[in-house]
Amino acid sequence: MRVDTFAVSPDNTHIVTGSSDGYVRLWNLGSTDKAVNERQIAPSIAPIGAVVYALDSSYILCACDGVLYTLDKNSLA
Image (cartoon, rainbow, N blue to C red; front, side):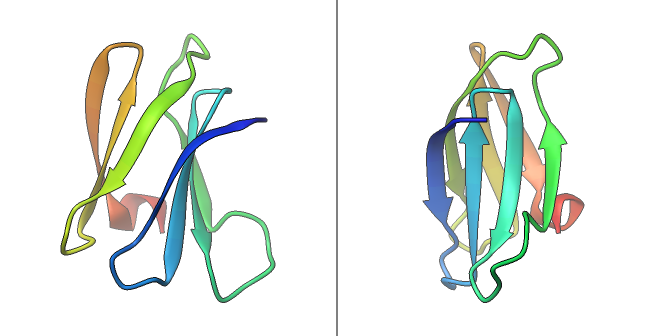
């Protein structure tokens, strides 16, 4: 896994990463444990090109293989 992109949540409690393996992972900044949760976006293992939080942290946008996906933050938490 290679992290290609990341974003810090507006409340500074989480980081979301997009990786070369097509996964979006949510990390808790208050912990050294593994990712809180992960979700494969691209079944063809296309890399995640960009991730960004909504200003209210309610959802995450990610771009992969020319498609923009909206993820509910709670589906990754």
